[in-house]
Length: 79
Image (cartoon, rainbow, N blue to C red):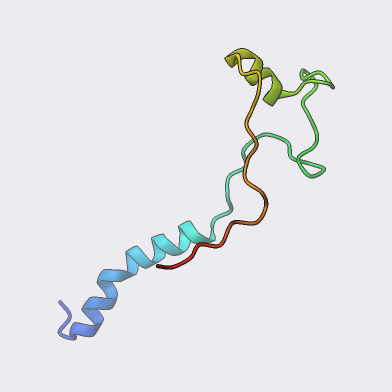
């Protein structure tokens, strides 16, 4: 076919390169959940005072949640 080894190498990698370019340049799919207004809009079927986090805690029977870490991670000493 082709006697030039460089040309054979380029022609072998061309389909994979084109496929990679098509995947990277295609737009990301939408999740379908409206995030207009910074993600603060709710669908019509969710009541205004509904708190999903509190509802899940109630379903699991969790009465108290221990506090999380502070905003700054503690520094670790090297031994």
